[in-house]
Length: 121
Image (tube, rainbow, N blue to C red; front, side, top):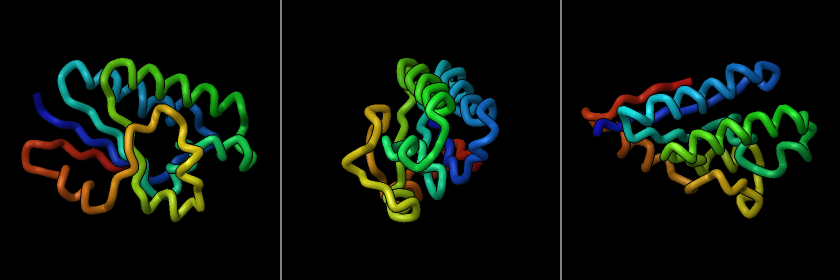
């Protein structure tokens, strides 16, 4: 089965549909691909419990987390880049359970092989 990597760099936190579509699309693609989402840059804010503490709407975050859980239940892996943790000044001890791993920039480059589809959002 081919690999699909979705690199999410930025998020418009006012557009809930666009954010949940990322995870819903990953879930749908998991029928045909091994799918991995990597949160990079400012998108990492949704990977921690700090999101609500930082003023993001609780209902919005709940909807995002539900779409993440649905994607996870279909086999999608969700990782966060260590640089995102630094960029967003996050506490990696407070990562949500949906996050599988903290990955390095080198990991991302190694995953980008000829038989892998990579999508940047």
